[in-house]
Length: 472
Image (cartoon, rainbow, N blue to C red):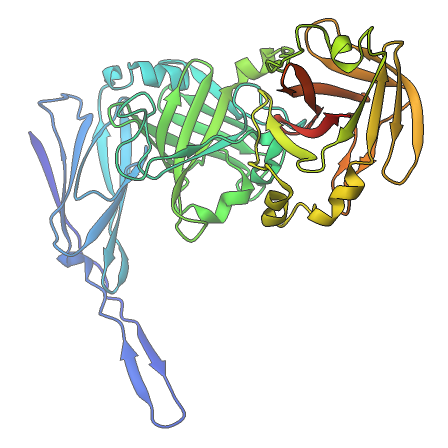
């Protein structure tokens, strides 16, 4: 083993802070800065493992002092770390000592790697990230200027501090602090502004190079640097360039150049950075990327909303609303539970079973004194396709309606837009932009369907606001 042992000498920095109170002067001083000549470390090249000197071992031999190694392709503050350079060339390692008296910059050390060893980058993860040796691959954040996420539900997810590589451990859990929240951007736009975030390109053409173009954070601008992927530890470090990220959390992350690889495929990449505890608690912020090739060739697919299973009493939507034997059915807004929200599968999002539940929630505005008024809101469907409404303030309207025949249970209104006030609450009964309702739930009393929840699809969230009507 070839061994280059380096002892460094330096100047002495002293910092004295004088505080002068009104009574008598007192003097305070920091510990004297450690002279760099007293800092012992070792950088060696293992020529047995690599005749070209590709394997470099960095060792801190000074107790009580932390050394930060900036080894071109990444950074580390381990007491002993091993770096493997895949490409030949000169590499200048910068060393900073963290002492009780402050930071001490040590003389940089340049080592020479005389041969390529592409085995260190010939790994499936390296190939997925960069495209392979001699190639490059460009990635974009999965949120564009139109507010569209093309693969993930949004541009970023949230995980516990002990979550990491999602294909390993207990579904990516490696400790006690494991949880995740994967928000849909449309309903949580506060997490990131829509826009063109730019590109980041990982290359293995002559070296592990990283170039970035931060279009949403001009202070970063265009960067050129290097990166290192630890395929075993599933970590990624960069030097001289920073991954694309959102501005909303810029000041909540201490180190944007040290990341966990959460997942990676040919088209997708998820990397996690540690959020500081002062920003709503420590967590792993996971940024979701897609390859530029995937993004450029992406074609949106129309995905229909699921149709909740509802009881139509053995007939059709038309039979439910009005039958040949009962030419007109009138439905009144429920006095107990007039409105709620459901997921797309019809599951209630609030456990409200009485007016007391609305009052306990506090924010609904619906109270017991509204009940006598709310039941005066009525809608009548007739089997000739006409519909009439009467609001609690006595206003009437009429028009026509049609029902879907494709099993989606949608009601479309013409020449009338049903709208009802819900007592003193801020909430109102209304239709979608297409002037439609969808029957999301029904309930029976005996053998008769006596309750219908008409749903209004939220265009920005995967949910319905539902209005509960009861058969007169």
